[in-house]
Length: 277
Image (cartoon, rainbow, N blue to C red):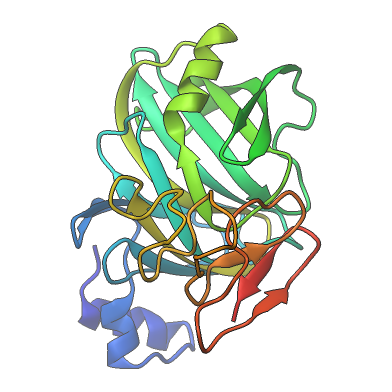
C-alpha cells in the first residue's frame, strides 16, 4: 500500500496533481474494515478507479476507461441476511452492474444478486434455470463458469451463480436468503461463506456511484417508515412513509415508498429508476 508521499510522487509523475486531502481519502485496492463494515476493492489495473470508504456503510467510486473492477462494502462472512441500500449509480448507460456480490469456499463460488445492469446483461448466453420473486421484483436464475480466472483463491476455475432482477432499481432491500433457497432448489450449491458486499462493478467503461448499505434488521429493510437515510427499503406503500434524499422513489416495477422527505422531490432518471433529489 502506497503512503501519501509515494502517492504524491506517482501523481506528479503522471501529470495529475491531487490535493493532500484527496490523497488521504483514496482507498487502495484490497480488503479491510471501515466503520464496522467489511470492504473489498479489486481492479485488474486497467484504466483509473478512485474508490473511497465513507461514513457508516457508505462508499463512493468513480471509474474511467477501466477494463474491470469490483468494489463495495458489506460483511465477512456473508450470510442469508436482509440487506438494505440506497444511493446513486451512474452506470445505466455503460457496462456496469450494481449487485449483492460474494464468494464461498468448498466449493469456490462467485455469486451475484444483480439489482441493476447497464448496456450488457451479465446473463447473456447463459441458460435460465428458473426465477425467484423477492422484494417486489422477479429475478432470473443462471449459472456460468469461469476458467482460469482471478478469484479469492488465486487463478482458478469456478462457477458463478446469478439472480438478475428484471425490474432494475437502485435502492431497497434484498432478502438474500430467498436467493440462496432458490439457487438450492435449482441444484446450485454454495459453500462456506467468505465476504458479501453491495458492489459496484464496471467493465470496459466509465462511470460513478455513491452507495450506502445497511443490515436489513437495523437499516429499515422493507419498513413502511424508513430510518433516516435508508432510502425507503424495499416494501410498503406511499401512505405514512417518506424516502430520504438520494433514495429510490419510483421506476418501472418499483413497489416501495414514492413520497420524498421534505426538501427533495422525486425525479425520473430513466424508465427504471426515479430518485429523491
